[in-house]
Amino acid sequence: MPDETTIPKTFSYVPNIFKDYTEIAESSPNGKVSTQPNLGILERAYDVSTADSAPNGRTDPQWVRLANYIQHLNKRHAEDGISYKLVYLIRHGRGIHNVKMDELKASEEAGTIEQIDGNPANWKNYWSHQDGDGQVTWVDAHLVDKGIAEATNLSKLWLDETEKDALPLPVTIYTSPLARCLETTKLVYTNVLAAHGKHLQPIVKENLRERITDHTCDRRSSRSWIVSNYPDYIIEYGFSESDKSWNAHASETLEEHIARMQRLFDDIFTHDPSPIISLTTHSYTVSAILALVGYPKFLVNEGTIVPLLIRAEKATPNTPPSLMFAAI
Image (cartoon, rainbow, N blue to C red; front, top):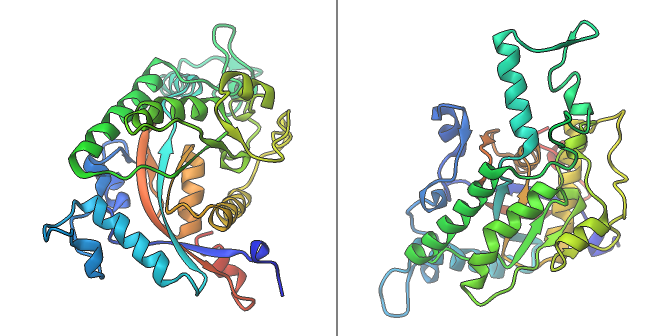
């Protein structure tokens, strides 16, 4: 009989819990989702009376009812290999690489971009493979002032929403090892947790990083650098000192990225019983997660929180490979 920890799972999102992010993106001027009021939770009842009723007979706030509903679902399915987690997906704030990409895109559209060896020196062809431009460096890109403000505003929004509707805190906070996510996590959650008498100790997960490309902005710093700059962060077991995943001559495919998200979710859902978690990550990684759970694709702006209710079920020996990656 296979070990419990080696059995892969199938993952799906639970619909009609939050607003339709795909529709929101389609109606947005830039085609991307921003953080929604009250994080987009829908006003609705759930299919269990204990999730909706407070002891005093009044109706609990929507977020409290959702938390109760998740608890109910996990108790009901405790013996059948199905579990649920509320997942807060956070895209990092604006980084220096985002600024450089936008500058180059504007130059290219204006017809003023520099030519090198007869080719336009745009982000994809040239600058993404450099460490910087002589003025700024984007290896393991850091947040710019706007990105810092975006993350700080998320923290303020979180505190405001918590006061209004008892927004539940994540029990476990995970972050990509790239600098822009480490800093975003700190800026978003330090004050939020402190307001509840808690201390920020996120877990750094290698598999939560951006799609691995040959772009230098996606090459992470050393383990020692992370320890030195974020001493309270918990680095997962087996995390290498240097970046062994990044390759200057190869990039991860979409299918490989989704498979990496499968491994990440298998790991988290198998070993972490927390019903509410947070993942600080990247644009392409959000897309890979959406593909894994079967959510129609949408893009998110920098410094955005998107919550999803995720259902995990043990894959059976007869589960077709196509259902393991249904959205590829």
